Length: 126
Image (cartoon, rainbow, N blue to C red; front, side):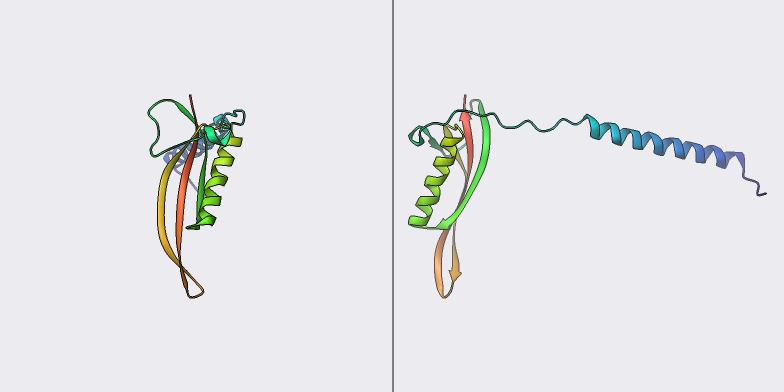
């Protein structure tokens, strides 16, 4: 039988206890987390009631969603922008905030197309 010094046994016990406490804290921490709250729901509004803002308002508001569109400049872009307003109206938003707006060139089969990518924050102002 091999002799194990007493100090090594104390260290091993402390290590086991530390590991058990760590595992318990991890499990408890995971169990205590709340599920994210769903965004509030509002009744649908007419598209004409939606305001387009260039920056986030200083007053109170609820974030409903972020929508990003990417389309060729022209009728395709206008259609995508109309879809953003329709989606916002269905969610009960009363404003959309332009978060970013970028225009770039994209080559498609020997043609250069002007493309715009716009990200909107859909909000309900209080």
